[in-house]
Image (tube, rainbow, N blue to C red; front, side):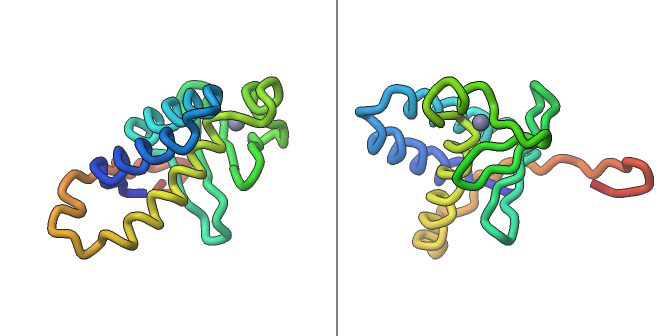
Length: 128
Ligand SMILES: [Zn+2]
């Protein structure tokens, strides 16, 4: 998905302010924000789930309210940190980002800093 970096930073700042009393969530939000800036392999599905390919573990995560990797198991953060993980933070940030983008889409500055999209690559005859 394309991400307006200015709007993303606003969304991240608001989320961190709301989570200020929960240090684990603040850390998860910071990690999620870094991933959203750097990782192009994030998609919002029609059912509202977020699909995320981790570049570090090469694992595909599908995130709704919970965290689940492609093997059906949640990540270690989710397991050992009372369900707090940056995958869930990614999902929340995307939801809030899209809500904010809807409100501000008439802004003349909207969309001036768009994250570059990954180049298409051919994998087994498919363009991805
Ligand atoms: Zn997770």
